[in-house]
Image (tube, rainbow, N blue to C red; front, side):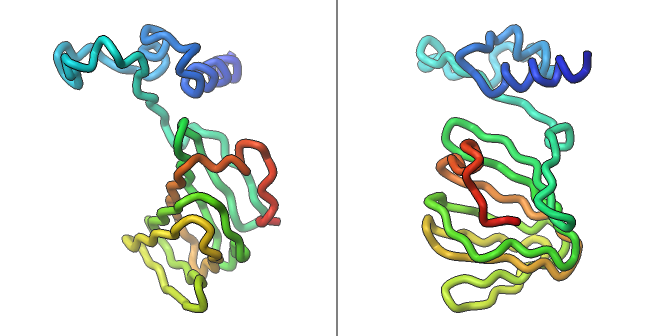
Length: 163
């Protein structure tokens, strides 16, 4: 039953056109807040509702023995939490997405444009679209990445740079 509810929740959350406000309220544990988060001039024109997720309840995908990710896509962006063990590497790659990387804990060395960058907890780096880069994690690391537009290669399953 829990699996069925999770799949139903995913369909509702990721398909705004299919989800009613009442259904979203039921699965996202929202509470009524009359007159909060409302702009009167826009109400008649805005049909979408926010999507509320618990990141730790998202499926975890192993990208090898030292690297896993949890992610979700919006209509125009992708959000991912990487959990890397010391020694993990993301090989040189590029993509048509702007990428913002935020190291939550741990440490990584990033190579891009012939330069080496040492990133530690609290550091943020922005990669413009199509800029080649690679990551070497020297410590167990939590890395949050945000991509815009959404990672179509992940949606299609065509990304093959991580073995």
